[in-house]
Amino acid sequence: MTTKEKAWYWGVGFVVFLALLWLLRDVLTPFVAGMAVAYFLDPVCDRLERAGLSRTLATTVVTAIFFVLFAAVIAVLGPLFVGQIAALANALPGYIETLQTSVLPWLASMLERFGIENLQDAQAYAKNFGNDLVRIAGNFLKGIVGGLSALANIVSLAIITPIVAFYLLRDWDKMVARIDALLPLATAGVIREQLRAIDRSMAGFVRGQATVCLLLGIFYGVGLVLVGLDFGFVVGFFTGLVSFVPYFGMLIGFVAGMVLALLQFDTVTPIVLVAVVFGIGQVIEGNFLTPKLVGGQVGLHAVWIIFALMAGGSLFGFLGILLAVPVAAVIGVLIRFSLQQYLASPLYRHGAPPGSD
Image 1: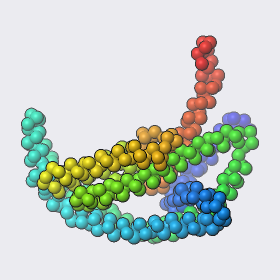
Image 2: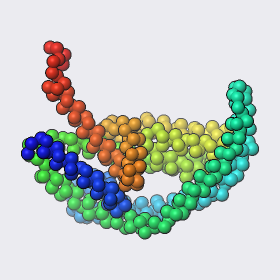
Image 3: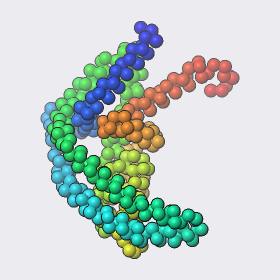
Image 4: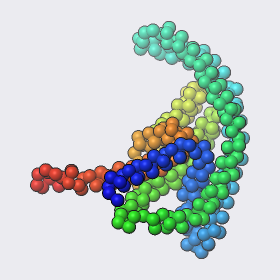
């Protein structure tokens, strides 16, 4: 088979794969989620195997503990989230009124001090902002309620994902060995090296970053509750969970927390404390959690991760978000490998002066 024929072969296969992914995006979600859980838990099963347990027993123990803990967390935090979100929806009109009667006049006076013109237009726009915000929030809540009609999909996700995770986790080593045996003999060594690089990249991000997000969510949530911020646990825990999106995740949570603090508190001290909680969280993440749990083996640039998440979500919805980081890791490793091949090729070195290496 010539190089051109190989290119056509892999190109057609890739197009077919994308088409199937698009057509089956709703059905594949629990299977991809189960695969992610299996990948996340595989090192734990390997350790239990080395301790003397069989693979089936290790898989049963690890899968059961994982999903029991997950269900317990949902059972404990679910009502809290629902209650705080409902309370936030009820309190939103009051916050809008406070925004229009207190914050906007103060903001207008500050703008006037700096000599900014067209204050009347700015105030008129700001007053309409409250109504727009209420409308957007209403549409958002309506979308959530409308999404409850898809309860069957949620139930199928909850039932199918543990089953898929169990069987994939039990047969993980066998599947890896089977795929390894199918690699082209001439390039098997190179492919294995790139697969190991992909595994290091995904393991550092998926396993490490997931732990970082969970710990940050707990810290932010508890910290904001202790400060006395209304709906602080929801805002804090959500901030931690979306911290896997570099910069923007923390920024969104920080802005939401500060806006709620400005609308709730009449004194400066609690507002400053809310900012301090987010500041301490960033220090803990940057100096302790990320270096210890994620390390420097991720190899995924922040901009590349943001683009991958946005593109995956736009193209394939929730399934695309699940696949975004693995696909980004694969593409990143392939790009680095291609650059290495190019720098070592005659195409790059042709005509170079002696001693330019």
